[in-house]
Length: 89
Image (cartoon, rainbow, N blue to C red; front, side, top):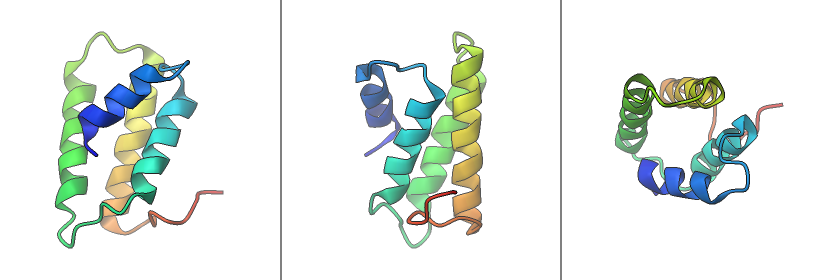
């Protein structure tokens, strides 16, 4: 799974602009078995999300907020502050 697949899934939902949809996709990503020893997959995802956030001026404020949340969560996961398998309460 990569950022293009996540975007495709998001577009196929009934509410692609929803922050809840974006957070759910991030949760699915985190629960997948994608952790490489060197976190290269997560670093690549982080770069893609950051680039998308910075360069896409057509994004609505809701979408920008959702992507910012995803970027923050990926950064926290890379640092080890959160676990991919532990849901946030």
